[in-house]
Amino acid sequence: MSSLPDLLGFAGVFLVLLAYSLQQLRRIDGNGLLYPFINFIGAGLILVSLVYKPNVPAIVMEAAWAVVSIVGIFFALKTRQKTK
Image: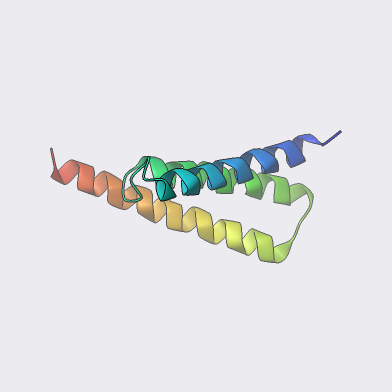
């Protein structure tokens, strides 16, 4: 049986892959709010799992993924405000 951190990590991987798949299938807009938001949550869950089983390259990757997602959320919100 998997531990809770592993399950959170798997959930994060699922979310990141889901967001990417939906964007590639043109189901969500890569410049919209949903895509970076799902990626941010996914990266955060993966980071939580990495606290329990550290892997420095993976931590760097997921931290960068989270930062890029935050930037994407910022730009999506900024674009949304301009269109109102």
